[in-house]
Length: 250
Image (cartoon, rainbow, N blue to C red):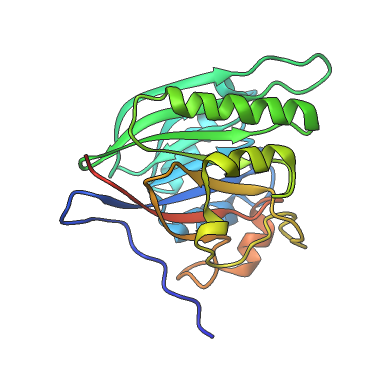
């Protein structure tokens, strides 16, 4: 059976916006950068929630180069958010952006959120990119912080996307899915598993949306013009998650 066509980005007559959101762990751009650029461009995203963006020496240069090569702009994040990065297309109007560092647990990596509020026409949307802890207890606490942060954004609708570092059966993932829409569970498209890129066997990356947003399609992209399986395998160690969402207007 042929895969359903992924809806294009557009503004509807009622003022709602159909947008493409891409979540992608890029492993500090240590792999095939040309393949990474081709994957992102093929997905034609309006928003990109990046995890493991370069965050040390010359991190701004690498972020700006990635944005320029993919036809996007840097919205926020990077080193000030401990790795999560937000990119957006020129279709987005940025109202605000804020980087959030989470409490540091001794002996574990520092984590953070890259957050912003954007508009697509009359539709306003909060967005958050995350990369949760490898430690189960800390990961569960961070999932709670994520939900609190989304509720605190001054926007009627919001999305959170990123590397959850556990499968849907895990406590942190379940906490998020209990309050938010898990894109793949609501409207699966493409394929499911995101890790590893060369032998995908588990879904640990996701796009979540608050109630009121319509999830039209969500999954690991496949069968898109310009998207090669070889690029997906060589760009980084994760596969991306691409979601098409309809965001209501006021």
